[in-house]
Amino acid sequence: VKDNYWIVLDALYGEGEHQVESNLQFMIGNEVEVDATRARATAPNGATLDLVSIFGAGLKSEVVIGDTNTQDTTFLRQYPKFVDWKLSGRGWVGTFGNNTPIPAVRNQPAPAFLRSGRVKFPFKSVTVMTPSIDKQARQAEVRVLEDSAGKFVVEIETKPGQVDELTWLLADWSDHNEKIADDSGWWVRRVDGAVRRIIVMNQDVVKIASMGGTIEFRFDGAFEGRIDRTADGGWTITPDAYNSVTPKLLGFAVSHGGHAHAYEPAGDQPLEPNTTTPLKLVR
Image 1: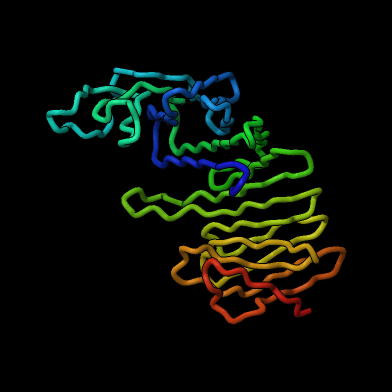
Image 2: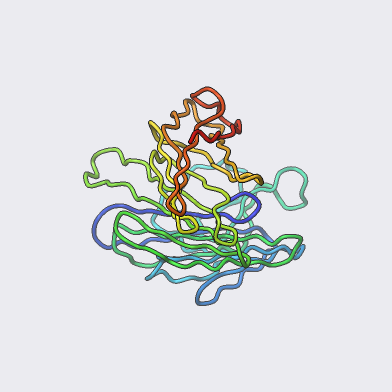
């Protein structure tokens, strides 16, 4: 979420219990602290990164530096003979390029934030990573609003009056011999209760509660992009830049107090990727 925080979603499909781990590697000089609910990394210049995870019951959190216990995983075994290396595990970083006094052919120990444990598949985890602004530490409060096998909804708050909501639909992958379908969802920002921005990810139909009413829109295919409220109370739509073909917007309606207002793009469809188009009121 630009200029605010990152959301990392992990979904593991399958059956039975399995040993899993999530490894987030930091650079040399960073200090990483872990408590029961979150972790915080502090860089040498004072900048910080706060991490809070949910849905990770059964995972143990720890900081690992220079671990030499190699796990059963996939890694390269053939390196040039001039490289000074040995099999190792978590908590190492590679070369830093030419503009550094650190030897470029050696791995260097550095802190890694490791979460590991034995869990039952299917399994999901959500981590919200909040960076400092001007070296002022920030953190997100994350609350679970809904949790089921195929869907979850979480609320994320980084400052008073601004509440974000992530709705995610997990892929239905009943036959593991077939290619997995893509997950999908949407993210909503509300400021003092009013919707200000909607980000849609691989979804064709979205319905959102807003100030006692609803916002509902439909596309003729999976849409990727955002919808923004303007200062004058209107709306704009911006498809993501990497859309090869933008699906057509079939309908956009805002309902409140028994009244419904319909909108359509002011320009021709399909909409241009990475181009903001106003939505005009049609009724």
